[in-house]
Image (cartoon, rainbow, N blue to C red; front, side, top):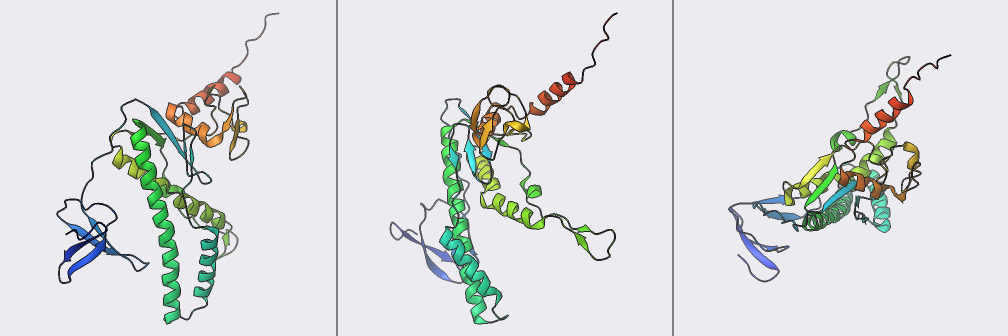
Amino acid sequence: MTLSRKWAAVNVPKVGWVRFRLSRPVPVAKSYRITYDRAGRWHIAFAVVPPPVPGPGTGQIAGVDRGITVSAAVSTGELLSCPGLTEAEQQRLKDLQRRFARCNLGSNRRQRMKAAIAKLYARGRDRRKDWVEKTSTDLARRFDVIRVEDLRIAQMSRRPKPKPAPDRSGAYLPNRRRSKAGLNRGILANGWGQLVRRLEHKAAGRVEKVKSAYTSQTCSVCGHCASESRKSQAAFRCVACGHEANSDVNAAVNIAAGRAVSARRETLVQVSLKREPQLPTSA
């Protein structure tokens, strides 16, 4: 039941009528779900499958390259960054975590610190979700076909396995767990999986996945594949034709053209030609 422009009410069994804030128009639904998150917030979600976003009908194809420094690079040259916690909020999070570590188990102070930390994490999660929704809607409206890398995010963000020391019982070898944990946080903080998932919902049947091999090492102009072409994280300069571009945008153009599928085949052909035996010269 709508009460005003910003408020509505729902009849919860065994509770009665409960008001809630409208974040969007209430759809016609037969059921709803009420959840309680760690930040102490109640949410109500109505079970409705929204219609897909219609394409422009221009036949335009876009490639999207996902990364850590740049959350999403579009083949049109756009560099999109997923917002997270500000520097002040990150410093406050560290302070709260230090204070939380000094709290006694079961104390009220520990519960307050836990709730404050959960609110900061929820703030970053809400910003990431809002960015994913807006970005996916914009891409679905502007392009008829959207091509992304076929990445196994669950395997990429998995914790490294421990390496037992062969000569010492109960000891383990370094497995770079700390650096891998930072990479995992970067992957999850940029919403790689959420972006593609929402694109598949909004642009149903218009999202294509291509292999990610050699997309960042292949020139989008001449198609030459070489690891030396990528000078740094953001700079790309082809060693064959001299083409210069942003490395993420160059990879997005390759994804849009579907060149990631043939990059390894072209590399193997070049290697086989170099190793072709020469015929003996006649005396």
